[in-house]
Structures are given as structure tokens and as C-alpha cells.
Amino acid sequence: MNERLLEHERRQMEEIRQLDMEELQIEEVDSDDSASSSDDELLRNGRDEGISTSGFTFNTSLASMHTYLGEVDDAHGRLSILEGGRILKLPMFYLQGVVLFPGATLPLKIVEDRFISSFLKALNQDEAPCTVGVIRVVGNYYDTRLKVAAVGTTAEIKQYRRLDDGSINVVARGQQRFKLLRRFTDENSAPCAEVQIIEEETPLKTPKEAFAKLASVSNPNPNSEDSPNASASSAKEKRKKCLFGSPCSCSSYEKNIDVYDFDESSSGEEELGLGFGGSDMKSNDKSKKRWRKKSCGARRTGFSAPLTFWPKWVYDMYDSYTLARRAAELWKEVIIKPALDEFARKPDVLSFYIASKLPLSEPTRQELLEIDGVSYRLRREIQLLRDLNHIRCKNCLTLIAKRSDMVTMSNDGPLNAYVNQYGCVHEVITVHNANGLALQGRPVKEHSWFPGYAWTITNCAMCGSNMGWLFTAVKKDLLPRSFWGIRSSQVADDTVLDQREE
View: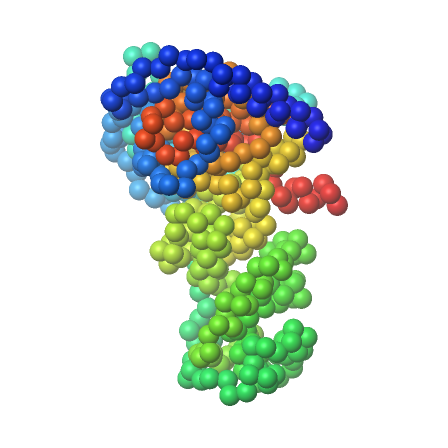
């Protein structure tokens, strides 16, 4: 397999060298609008230059505003949040390859008559004006029917514009999760459904009366059992005494918990079987060492005296605010941009944001949407952030990119939804470097999601599956010179690879 891949890449590089030998007559102009290269030069720049370390000149707000849709008008008569548990009928949009989360932006180009009817119905309905239901569907290879997910998200129509050809450009925003109860079509053949709004829980927080603050002290004896340098075995013994011995023994264990924080929480979950996913929660040795080193750097620590039987780390397993801080820290290590420190104060908002932006496969993101409970969703996201390392083709598992290759080309994060001129919505992961991809066709400058870039279709070099696009700059002062857009519906998670190897 590797030999086939190397041979294909050698042939492709030979073609690029041949293009380099051709003498192309290019007119030099100063205008930004006309400062572009030939198709052949775009391909060469895209493959050779990659992302530049000298700067980043692309305006990422252009992609987040979906300026490629043209001018759109604000919708009026929008409805506020619907009451949890409410059952109502909504016009529906069934989308392949898309999982919409509350707070995420969804661009649409409606070209089919039945979905145009759904859109018009949403504008004029009294029960929930300017609101549609969006739910993921999956093709069934054994027959012509589609499998519909059990949970979807309501979308508020924020802007739209009807075009001369009858199609409608729409910018919508995810609002609330719902359970699908019944599907039907109305008298105008508009897809509709009866749904029940999911009532979201209030983020959990450790009760203040569960612990009392002690004064900050320095450890006088760094080699004692209560020091951060104590062995892991002694820490486990203290945990057992704390859990199954007298409640007063929690105070000594609490010192170790404050020092070992993330490391000790993980081991405690595994022993008690309280962790989300049970035995599937695999620890990462590097992560544990990192958290331990970071925590042990402090010489003075404020301790908490437990006033209940359970120690603090048990509460931290379900404290939404503690989990939100951990998730934000891991996001900073793995994804880097945008920073999510402010979102840590709103665990429910943070959990949906991370779920909508993680560069994961479509089924995994649907799994996150269906999880009830902010704490459980954050715990699963922490696990996924720690495991995230590679982006692979879901069909042949060819390595396409690493997590370090990701680049944020939109203010909304490294993964976003975009719609093409035919009405197909794609969720795209942007990376500055990719392997195992073959180009198909010539660069196209029209209908580009990223102004100033031309796009070229890319396929997996091993199995031929369509993986996304190569975007190459058509303006000389635009950085990065190129990047890749990988369809999330075509990638496999590292966890899937681990299961296949087992």
C-alpha cells in the first residue's frame, strides 16, 4: 500500500516539474482583483509552499460570515428559546454529512422545491416563526432509504435572500436540541416532523457546604507521605482509606488530590467505575505527566477540608465548571485557536461549542449531540481531546493529516459548515499540510468559500474517495499560500482505528 502511494506521489511530482518547465506568459498588474496566477502556477504554489511562517494575512472573518452567499437580508419576527419538553410541529431539513449543534452557524442554499416549501412554511408559521428543524441522515447501502438520527437541533433563520433563479440563500443558527417523534409531509410536499424540545439541565456545581477552606501552608517536609513526591502506590492506599475507612482520613488524601488534580481524577474514575464510558476511558501517560508537573510546580497550596464522606475529586468528576476549565485547557493545547477561557464560565455553551468544532467523524459528533447532561458531554469531550492525534480516510484508514497540521481559517474554529452552488452542505476541517491526496481537475476561482483562494478537488490516493479540496491563493500578498479542506464525513477517528487493530 505504501509503495503504491509513493509511486503515485512520484508521478504527481513529475507532472508538477513538467509544469515548471513550461513558459507561461503572465501579465503583471498592481490591482488586487486581477493579481492572479495561471492554473498551473496555483497548483505548484499549493503543493510546494504550504503555509508561511512569516505571517497570516487572510481575513478569517470573511469565511465565518459566509460572504460567498452574497447579500442577505435580516429575518424578522424571530422567536426566543422554546420551553423544554414542549411538543410542536416544525418544517424539516434532512442533511447528509452535517451535525448541527446549538450555537453553530449553518449556511444553506435551497434549490429543491420541497425544501423551498419548508422554508416558506417556517417564515409564516405562528407556533415557531423563522424556525426549522435540522437533523442528520445517513445513506443505507442495502436499499434506497435513508436512516434518520433520533436527535436534531432547531435552527433560527437569521438572514436570507431569494435569487432570480428561484433558489434561496440562508444563514441559520442552531438553537435547541430536540427528539424526533414523527415524520410527515404537508399538503405542499414540505418535509415536516413532530418534535419534542429537550430540556437542558442546569450545569452542576460542587456545593459550597461540602468543603471548608483551610489556610495556605508550605509543606515542611517534601519527602513525607503527604508531599507531591509521594509514590503512586501510597496515593492509592490513601484513596482506599478515604473511600472505605473513616471520613476523617479524607483530609490527608485531599492534599494529594490538590496536587495531582487531573491525574488522580482519572485513576479514581477507573477504580470506582464512575467514569463516562467505563473501561473505554483510556489514560494518556504523557497527559498525566504533564498535569502532574504543572500542579507540582506550586509550593504553597490552599487545601479544602471535606465536610462530607466523599473526597473532592469525586465531586470534580461531575462538577460542570471544573470539567469546563479542563476542557478549555486541553483545547488550548490541541486546537490552540480560538481561546475558550471565557467560555469556561458557561459550561453548557462550552460543551456545545467544542462538540461542534472538534475535527471528528460525523458519527462521533452525532454521539456528542445525543448525550444528555453537560457534565457527561464535557467528560466525553475531554477524552476525545486527549485521544485526538490523526485524521484518516474512513474507507482505507490512510493517514491524511495530524492534529498539529490544523489551521484556523475562520473565526469560528477549525471545523465549519459551508454550502456549494448546488445546495450541498459540507463540514470542512482546515489543515495546512496533508498527505496521501491526489488532485482532480484544475483550480476553480468561482464559488470559493474563502475569498482570494481557488479550489481544486482532492481524492484519497489509495481508495479514490473524495476527501475535500486544496485551496490556493490567487493574490500574491495572501497568506497562507495554500491549505486543505477535509470533509469531516470522510474521516475516521483514532478510536475507530484502535478498535479495528484490537
